[in-house]
View 1 (tube, helix red, strand yellow):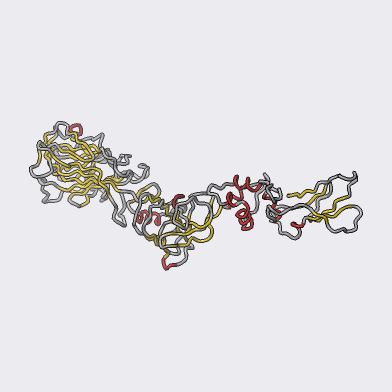
View 2: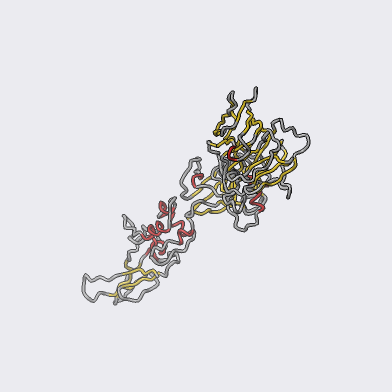
Length: 496
């Protein structure tokens, strides 16, 4: 009598032990019902029995089968039609089958990326190019009864060359080992990223063929993990000096503790549990732009001021968050000061326009202004709409600074020149005469608003009358006109 060989095709699998229970979701029920003649039906897949002889097992949702021979060509196939909820994770196949020795192992299984068979009292796994001997079949195994066979197929990592796919086989809840090295995992040659179907050849009884996929919760360096804590453990042990963020890809209520250094959590609005951090450990939080809330809890575009991020982070011992850094998703803003925990599950941050944005503005076409609190206060007072805008840029700041303020009661100067002079754009720079000094060769003028004021220091400011030499004070000598009444002479303020 022919025996059974199972051919999972387009498979893959290897994963470290997880710190918390992973979540799997079913996408295939391979034997949902069996017709009186033995034909199985599936949910999430379709059977092709390829002319096999079938009969139902009375009183059970199971069927007996016998294929024409033990070759892959005559195998019955169960093809997945449902879309698994994730890729590049782990697929777990839960089978209930009879397991007995085949006459001979197939020489080649060209379309199968893994297979399982019992031959000469040994469990065996196909790795894509050859059979790998696993543990011996223990004494007392009754091959006339259905047995639980679990196959875990690991697709972790998008680069199958750097992280080969592997498979683990368990019989009756006991993991089998590779005979040569004792490993539970068999390395496979496939580069697939999910499970596509199952093939069965030989003869025996088939009662169950369910497939479930691990839901990736967090991803680190291109590898998904079923829990945030597992990703944190991997990142903490990573000696890379430039660690990428742990990207949280699904909502999770899991609470985790961070005890290693320089961890970045890109929570993407998915972290609902509490993150507890050792006060000596640098931790970065990388929120999405649409996570920021105003004081009323409304999602807002990040302009400038105080905002809250809905992520629950606690520092052990209730110490200040001195080692916590919020990495903003927008490059035109920066954090001021230290994040503060508010409301139990939020972080409050103060945000301002980035220094690099202000440094990139050259209102005179040549140089930028020194970025300090004086400049920020000035922009906030006289160009606030531009300064705090969510889409602020060096160009928008530059345009605001070089705009000539010619409105009512404004002095007509470009804004940056008023700032450089240390005055507001509504302060007049019109010269006025000084009480007679008795000089017969000219008239003395001054600019009152510039007497004793404090310039910004960005320019050397001088004052020039006509073709005369520039002077450093706003008290000017206007020579008497030589061309008669009605003559005029220019008074200029120079910024160098």
